[in-house]
Image (tube, rainbow, N blue to C red; front, top):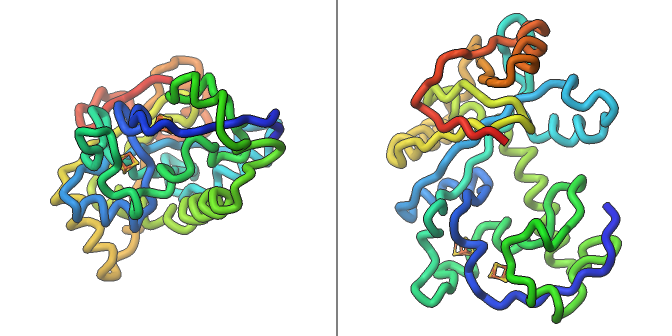
Length: 248
Ligand code: SF4
Ligand code: SF4
């Protein structure tokens, strides 16, 4: 990652807490549900063909994924559990302050730094107002400057890896087994909160992944769909209403 030095001073505007899905670790998802808030599930699938000349990128993503059966082959699936803040985060008060500041999710305390080692921080891609980049401490130079943020980024990456199989198992137990093709689209599920809590409890009680669950992938782009299909992956052609298909 190469960055020029970037200064930043958060002004507490709360814009980053509105209109988005906020990725959560498995444990954070449980806490979020217990607080009475909804958790969305985003599913993306891929195989090595996606990054033929970027093995490091494939390796990074594969560590965040569970390998599953699809058609007559295997693919990697990443399940992202995310707080539903599509209107605004339920913890945001009427002064635009975080009501759970000390216990906020890791990604909230990392923002606006990047978690992916393959993304360079670019203020133009952040929702923060322009003036916050003109003052404050340098937060990024050739790497993230604040050691506390670096630790949180490492914790977030570790959780992505450690939680990968558990999250996929939860999805299978709730019949959320259609994913979108990574970097082409997202399949976004909005499961019932009580049912998702029950699925997490069920998993915690020791029930692991069902054998022989076959996943499929939804791809609208004809050329890509046929390429993926020809490699043996099961392609879903129905326009199911059980998830939102969001093209990128
Ligand atoms: S938990 Fe707090 S910091 Fe995170 S999105 Fe909600 S209000 Fe914002
Ligand atoms: S949008 Fe940026 S400046 Fe505003 S609260 Fe979030 S991190 Fe701070």
